Length: 590
Image (cartoon, rainbow, N blue to C red):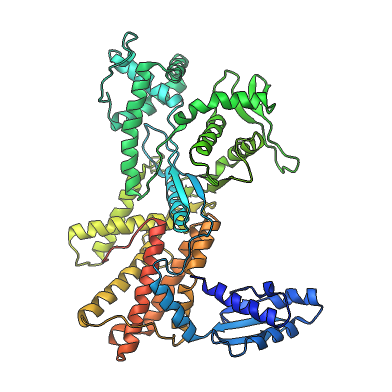
């Protein structure tokens, strides 16, 4: 169904045309002065320059054409040439009825669906997820869900770091600890054990140990580099160990991502693009794009109007080794061949922006991607910081594991709920604490503009008032409670039609409901879930202000009561849809 703002625009465009002006001038938007009007049109100001007339006279002529239009309760020309509009209460009620009957709540899918590959994971295997992985997962998941709701095919890829030196370091440390394992026997080339010789806990101890040794011991580092080279050349025992590392790591990663309510369609990594690298390199050479510079193979990507220096894109190091640029470019080729995407979006730490500038320019310049057919997009996010303004750390100065953060927030919500004298059982409190805790983390992150750093303040995030996830949850649970009590008091009652609004608070609630589709479109077009967070906060505020004016359960007029119940039920449906797109959900009770 067409958005309310678009329906208003259609009417005003027709009025411009009837008055003898270009109908395109009739675009209407929500008013930036809601104390004066609900919607506004500034087209007469632009028309004055074209038609050489006073804008106020043009606005008056347009308003005359709107006289008697049932959509508006007010259409007036205001000097110097603005057109102020209020929607008729009866029309708002009709609109709400239509939104209530629409499972998409007035938000249509895009008419030209696209195929989108979304890269929003990036963890390294053999290492636990930590808070540094939080924003990529949360923002990426919301972008994916919103884009799918808009009708697009979205393929989410975790893009594992599974092919670098860290694998060689783990193999080397295992060889030092358990040299008798068959993976290290040159005579054994097949029939390796199906069960891995380590657990995820073992790997989480082995990798930092091996990494530390590699930094302190040159001989150990050389051995790890040699193991990495042999792995990549196809050493059968090392390949078998590598597969064990992948399988054990992915199982643990899936478990932790599941706690975040984050899923991926693809569990590919840097290793998957390796077959694409040699032909890519040869083509770049043959086409004259790649050349040797100090022994390394590079492609120039600087442009004349660059405000800062943009170094060449490094394709191969002087020793012939591939770099991140290489694997990212080869992965683009793989994605182009497998999925023919219209967009490839990378949700990555904003500190990697220059890396992706070089990669994108190189991909376009060398013809890996046709710029007219596929856009490469970087959604850079800021850091989650502690109260000291620096990237979040544990008290001991280490990087906090993600599962510990989730546990800490859930425990804090649990203790707060328990202190408030809840009559819920222990099991119910724990379950609710998990749901509200996740909402606190996700909303606390997503409500910020992705590119901005933010302070992780546990007390603020779990507060039940203000712009927080628990406040949104509380609003939804409040509605559920009212609906339940209404049903219990009047089991035979049916939901009534939504009546025209009475009073400013009720009108504000109707108008805010009508903005849902705009919030979805903004969030999708800008890759900015914070736009949707802002919307549900506004909607929650409007609902609570309306509720403060209306004692719904004690309303003596049955028709009005039924209308109120239908209205708040619609608010709940919109909120449920919105928070699902953001990746969390509300409990039944709190």
